[in-house]
Image (cartoon, rainbow, N blue to C red; front, side, top):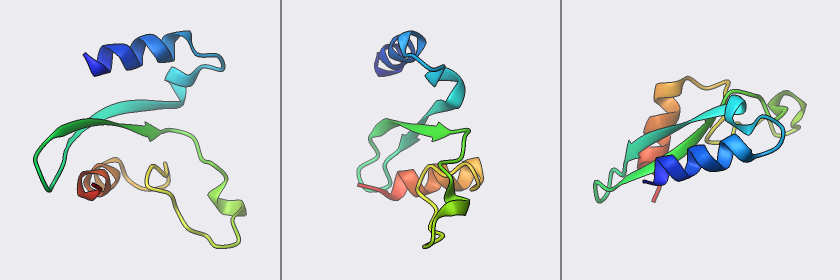
Length: 74
């Protein structure tokens, strides 16, 4: 149900939001609950950051690594 709501929201959002990333399902490491996360396909300009820190959904990080990182988050 949550995925359908996301798809409805993304389809109506301005700027092609649906094309900028994908929704993926992860299982929480702690309690095993499923949740949706957003994996961006576009860069938020990491290369311009003076700290050079990648965010959790950074498209410069592999998909599986991002999903593992999201699963570890509470």
